[in-house]
Image (tube, rainbow, N blue to C red):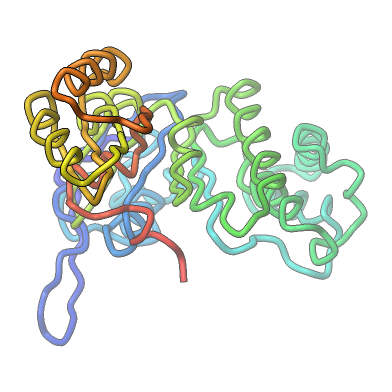
Length: 317
């Protein structure tokens, strides 16, 4: 569905050539739900624009939905849907009419376009809103309309750029419910960017992380967290001297960090490591007043790989 080799994009800034994307090799098979993550400036938006033919690559190759993005951009566009960060519908026409018009722009006959519009209105719970203008809809309703516009021509592959940004938690959950229904109903391949890491963690079956224009991690969220981040154990001791002792013992079983009376360590399996660690501390005379374990997050993965937080870097302005 998506196959790239050495995909590169350079920009000229003040007579200097600056690479934004540096040789992306990526393969996405039909039916996958892929979350594409990275901080601002990492190259994810540039990559998305190349894959959707909005920006030509400087070098390398990319085939999307069976068509080359450079030699056959029209073939790519006919077979993909794209939902950008900005709303796609106008303000002055009814929701149903917007969808029909979008279908007609793709060359669909009037009757087929109307039937497809009604199908999507039903699928995305927009039917009661068919005779309203987009400007009267809530943020979540407008986002569902954007998705409907991207699906009107029955694409095999849908690109979603920050589909839930700016929505309240209830609307975000509602949008995600409909995104997942698309896969269940049509088997649509979904390739999306998001800065909500919990969405990528819980919803995507594959996570690709880009930084500095290069892919630095690729796998399931569980694989990345287990292999690159590890579990966390945090203990609090009665005194700083006890914390120093606990940190020395922690260094034998994992990566440790001590701050005041708090000791944090990273281990492969916190549930298995914690009992033995506490017994060792007790034997060394260390008084532990609190202990807890935590599973890693995708931000922990990014922190391990780059030394900085993805969450801090990727908050939109």
